[in-house]
Image (cartoon, rainbow, N blue to C red; front, top):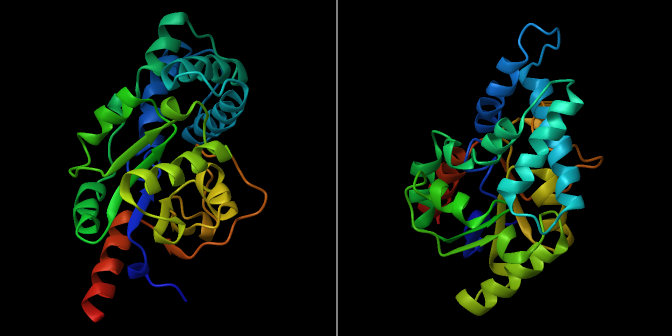
Length: 248
């Protein structure tokens, strides 16, 4: 069985793992819902997030070179059409610009400070560079590498993103595949492709999907990939690392 201390670098998905994107997405959908209040189309948090997950995944496949704010602008229009709501250019663009306002999970900063004592920390994200810069200010640590879809020209779960990650880990940090523990919440964006690349993985199962929870803003996968470690928060993982180191 692998141990948490067997790895030298944690490669993170940011949004959904470190940043509470579901809270951010739902907050950013409120102007659309308010505009359509009283027209008979009730939108719940579950239905709104589910529509986001489906529309975002399809848009990423259709326009892999589109910057994330522009992609989100199109996603917002697709969500409104899917839910039978009336949108506007201003509302679509405001949603596209919402990433800097998405909050960090309450446990993220403290957990990252603990993990930073034992690992290199690297982000592999579907969000654009400016969005990442705004989010990093909430996370409380300096990362050793940040690779975005804007850098790569495609969105996870594309294999190109993981090829880019492994190439740059080797070139910039001298780290190989066996050094990596890919740490993420999304099965669709991260764990399915990570296992295809032979990466060890830690599932931060914030939605408790392993216990039958909701898929939320993540596109559903038909078969759950194998996971080396499962935690329900990043704080729980950081505590497990602390105990592992203490018992060594």
